[in-house]
Image (tube, rainbow, N blue to C red):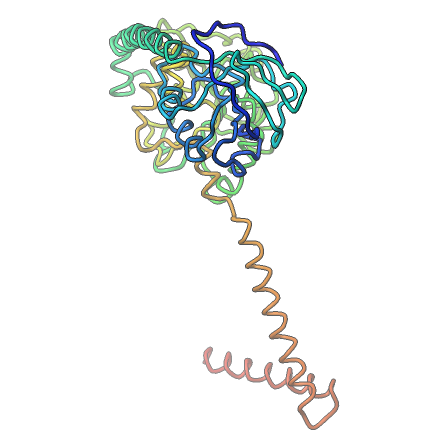
Length: 398
């Protein structure tokens, strides 16, 4: 195990207990009982995560990440200390720590598995947490003041666009009262698209590909209706797929990649705005063309993300999604709505089995109980049913 290097203010009492791996892929949480030692990998542990651990009454928690990094104020570690749970940081790896092993934690933070040393962790005191918490509060206030200052500047620059859609290209009624799927580049894009395949088949939404995501759409057999982004990032085949191309442009009208469009002989429209995000422009296009629903595949904007790394989410991304309001939904939500519970397959199987049993019973009854042999009885019964249906149809058509 890699030894964490931060000094602690005071020694912790020695503890012995069974280690439980409570990381996302571990199974220790369900096995944990009072007095066990929890192993987690949770940077900036939240209050909810701490409460989940406290429900099992651990004697100590070993964290492979920092309980508080200083990026944002978090209350989870304080909650654990209030419950007299010993906290240790062992950043860098889990070494010989395995679920179910007997572990001894020394007063100096030394970790022993069985009789073998397994490294050293840093005991965390309330003084450590209070200092980091105060620093995180100061940083958060400063970052948010700068962030929302930039937000106000963007509103000043783009109020006509945000309010009335001034500058957005006219797409006619192609999106009006229809569902629109905005697909942006992301690491798991293929899986995300496969997850909403049934939704796409059922509603045939308008598909907007953003940048390189357009190539993935074409590769998977989805034909984008629109492509928004710098055409130098998009394959020629995608640009020639029949989708209408919209180029993000600077406020003065200059559109990067226009020469490539002209070389390919593909028509395009420009969308001038003071934002560098084609995803935001795609969402605004759907908003100002009266889309019924906007499903985003890819980029997600969350408040915690803004708190932790405001530079990763520009103000225009937040304003764009606020403008979309109740129409906006992430594709993971749609995927969950279309997910079939595992028990559903079993229910269908039992239903089909029941139908087959009923048919078999009818065949046996008809075949065995009649004046002729088995096959004659089946033929006579079938002919009788067919004649009855034919007679009914003749009466209805007269």
